[in-house]
Length: 184
Image (cartoon, rainbow, N blue to C red; front, side):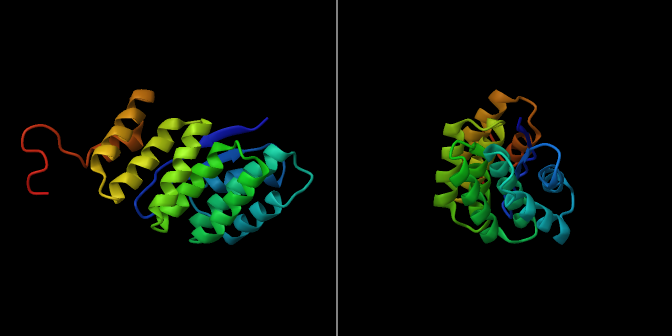
């Protein structure tokens, strides 16, 4: 049974990872690496082995490709991460986290149109934590100067999870009420 755990903090310099855990194996080690505060070269190799393990069930293998993408991206290889997310999506097209993470990697590369397309697809598929996807999308909108769209997505994230810290932190950058926007 695949359990999805999310660790989102899309910053404009990078996008948020959505990690997926599998079970006992290199796949579980890869999941742990995707969530770890520091990712090593050994973690990248562990995740590569897990993703390429044809003995895994399809959902577990797809999740391993997502986790491999997360560690690649965190090691500064967003293009390689996109390839890993593509492999996950090819194995399991209904896995929302593959599109969400690919969108985050594309956002990090400045590919905002493609990022929005991927994040929208992830939202349509129903990610485990839609508020995380909404914050990712909000930050892409913000990067594009689409502040009203970003604001709406952040508000929608808080409707789902009122105490969701990434949305609350992002909203701190916005002014509302009289005088809002003056001097911006």
